[in-house]
Image (cartoon, rainbow, N blue to C red; front, side, top):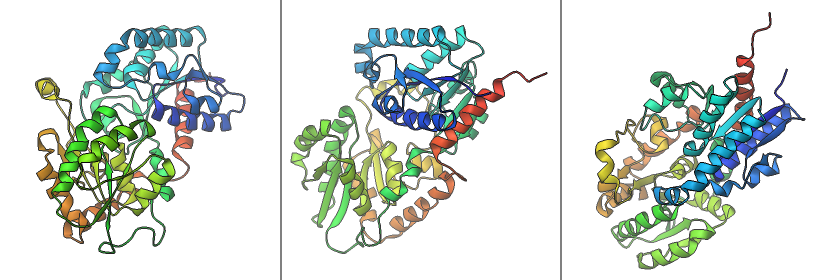
Length: 388
């Protein structure tokens, strides 16, 4: 027996990309599979019928969430009710836990036998670890993107969890330079990547910091490339006007990947981009400045993880310098970046550490989406009654 109807519920663009590849992998196994849920354009292109535009729930940050709270609450209820009224064999929730986990809890309460799979683990290993054990009430299996997450869920009493691979490991050829594509240090101008973030609030917190950091590097010839989105390009150009080096701002994916392959070092805000840089073999110094009100919340938030950068968490060491909030000053960031711009022991040590990522992240066979589909279907089969 195979499932005939699967609901996939995503809440933002990266989840739409993951959900689309999962939908394609599931349909390759079950050609007549019915797929519906909350989908963006990529999932819809793979045949996932959406209940409403995913943009209705694709909001991030405290301010935007509060502003659209009535819409979000209505869409949570509508999504859960649609699943209850037309029960799938499997519900797959994709990231965006503030939205998708609320849907899953409502669905499980009405459909206790429904198989629920969570694609992308919440960061229970970093903060609010008690969420892991609570997830057992409404999640049967977690599909982990990071290799250390299954052990974290086991330690914290969370649901069954399987590492299915990060989608970035499918893009290594696009991230890594061909012979001669990345110049040697000292061969003309140094090619530096600047990556201040992908959301407006994060960009505004990091652009002045990065500009002041560049000013502390002296007058060495540096060529700075800053990949961003068309939506943010204008704001970034305005914020970069005070930088000592005018960055070359690129917005297309092709130009971004070419810049990764050519870069000799990077200055980045914490985020998934640091894992892209690490897999591309680009020595990096990273920082993260929090919102102005974050210090007020410190007494109430306990961070469990020893590091904030994904590459450092995977490697189990502070291979990439990471400077957080009060430590994210131009002087400290420049001191962390400067040794990476020459043939130094610090640069060599980081490169050696990054070379271990492939062994830690690669799957024995198949792609992440194929592995995710396999584990999803196995979770459903494991929940079926044993024939007598």
